[in-house]
Image (tube, rainbow, N blue to C red; front, side, top):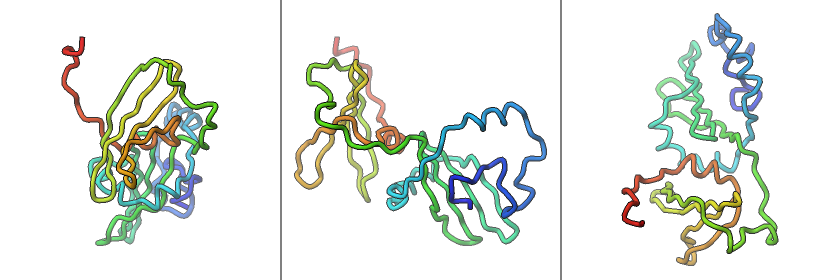
Length: 187
């Protein structure tokens, strides 16, 4: 139940200790929960659990409870990603489920691709974990609201362009954007 999207931190249900239920309920939180973004299961991200391990070390869980036998249940939020883990007493923390607040989208049809004549609005470089290594990618946002990713193709060794990439918000949530020096010299 903990690893399903039906689990709610404020109402864990009868399978969990009654101490997990808040003793004081604030009306504002009740309204906030009703408007919380829907969670979409991401088994494809869960299959790449190693990509989250380093990120989870630097994030404080938004939910951290344990049972009488010492098993810990944790929920981490990293941008649009929610990661749920369990850890038996003296055991290794294991990822049980990964969710996103962004629905998985299908590929863009060629006629909907970003036009080469659109003006650039913003360009951001990101660094992400890639297996045991790191790689960079660039996100280009246009004035028409389109997104383009430029990244190295690991197999061909050349750069590739992806118009309207799937799950861009999830990917950038897990990546880091290096601090760049002031761009005053560009003027």
